[in-house]
Length: 86
Image (cartoon, rainbow, N blue to C red; front, side, top):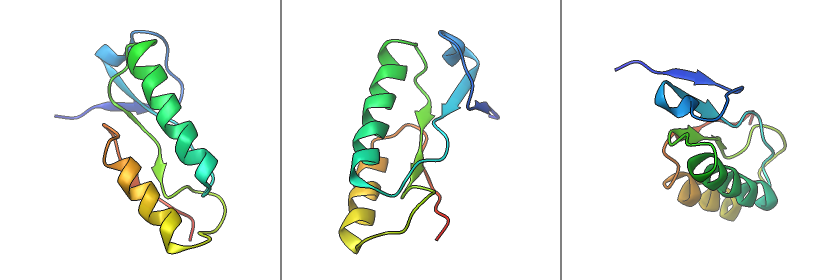
């Protein structure tokens, strides 16, 4: 079934659309931010199908541990895609 994916949504848009958090960095703090954003959109805005770029889009991977943590966190995202500039 097709779905609408956007970076700009509004409260209760989850009935008809999904939300992508946009380009993020390849850092540990951005992993934390992706989880915080996911919980916020699920509980506060009522948008259950959300996700971010797994692995980050900007920056370089400083080690295999960082990508492993991104993959582990991404397994919990309702909308997960591995996307990186590198």
